Length: 261
Image (cartoon, rainbow, N blue to C red; front, side, top):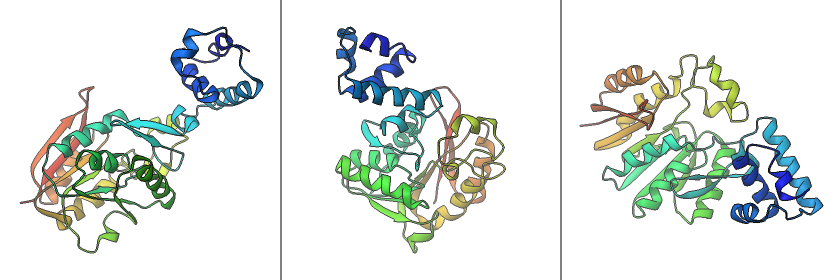
């Protein structure tokens, strides 16, 4: 097998990514020298990647990494793969002044680490109920040389009355019966499904946020398509003010937020 034959195995861009990972050659080199022969061990590794991809496994899990907000992060099936639309949550947090920030349901640590990178002097605390997810976040903190505090527990349980200037979260918000879950079979269900209506985690977060925000502090939440009105109602019931909704690049309402007095 040579490079040209290998690149026919999948859609070209995906094939280049997988072949580059298997061979150690850059994508540019693969394009420049399509006649190059591949050693048997590279062929075997590449073909194993191809089989995983054909079975539907996301490329990020096959490669064990994903880029988010300029950081290359380790990912595995214990954590959700960071999505480009979640970068909006980072943008909005960075528009606010904060000395302390809490990331609820941190997963790979993507949001917390991106914020720490851009606000190095801030105290950043990141929580997750999954010990396996926290191990991934810990590896990423070391990998990125960023100092964040990692805690194990559900939502506000490990905080003992601590308060923050900003709270951010990309919580589980997919309804249990949503048809899109079939396309997400490799990702952790606990990080995806937010109960029958998708709002279980968001209810818990909005109920507890005010008790953990400093005066004038903001809560910023990612949510699913069509949930903006329900989330705004939950923010209002929690006593938050200046309620705002922000759309993603596809103009779909994606982030909701409010602040305490």
